[in-house]
Length: 101
Length: 426
Image 1 (cartoon, rainbow over the protein chains, first blue to last red):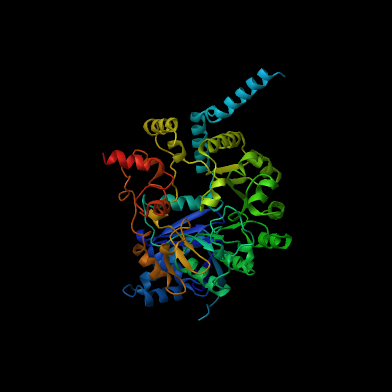
Image 2 (image 1 turned 120 degrees about the horizontal axis):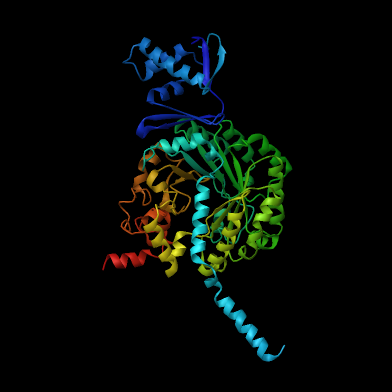
């Protein structure tokens, strides 16, 4: 995955966190697909705001919520989630350049 | 015609009239009622037609209690341009006066919070009359930038060509819809309830919305005024290219409105006419709410039908699909920022809090401190062992509270409740 890619949710994709069962849903009203993830994916999507690269997202999650995990392990997990969501059209790449700091 | 012939004809006519209610085959009506409800299970709100919504709902555990609501009813104003005879504000005209409504910025901030923080996935915009607000289209535009599916409820009177065009550009034609209220299938009936000239304006609004490919649903209440010509509603829908119709029950809010209420026999008659017609029609989907299972319980033959239904079949239809009181999935927010559990009762003791005075999380956390938001589920209701429970799922809590002052009683419309309690207590 391109480390400089800045991502955001695809238009017409709704997010919904069900805290009582720790399930995170993405509802895609374009292609009528549903994606179900866990609390980690909720953190990743919330950190994603159309201005950050994957490295910046990992850094933010590490600094704010999951400081007990090694950055490398977090990177792998975040990359897997983002790649899957990109492949399934829940995310779009805003631009492929060094992100705004 | 001699005198004896006149008398014979009169007697015959009188007998037909007396037996009018008996002329309905109650069993047939019950079948029609069940058929309508079953058909509707596959015909949902526009947004719910998306299978991702269905899959999301079906993936939740049975009896799931939501941490935060996923659907909001937002009253953008209490002000209204009409004074309808059957309105729940009719006896409280002070409600129509513009009070300290949330301003544009406050509403936008509220939308940000609801979508970005608690992740609502459905929004109903209602009033008063939403188009009385000069900034309504600005608010709608802001909401749609977040892609949330919306339903707009309006009387249609203030929708002109420009507004219809703007709506066509702003709304998602797949997920959103506009619901227009009509009080009859003809101008005379409608205008009698809503005021002179309002029918023509509402019809014009529907035509303009359809011209812009906006999905329209006609909402109607079955009353003594709308009933006589109500069977023409299908033709009207077809002429207007509208294929969604909801016919609701009149909720009496004061004794002055009693004249609008149909007696049970007449309600059954008109229901029979409408449901028979609806069954033969494929291009118009009718959600029929004017008749309830509780109406069958009022008649001895109806009770037998319900008993057979319970005993012989898997129960597929229940009266109460809302059950927000059990699942905590929906909230109503008034134009002043008052938060209510449901739109069925907006009395002072039903207010959970005000968004100008408290933050949402505090209001939500304190919800069990109000009479409504005490935990009420199947296990706490007084009629939990009633054999008809699978049909009503305990009924509406707000309706029970309004009639009995107790959320754990049966819904007000359940005429069997008192008999059940008598039997239960020996």
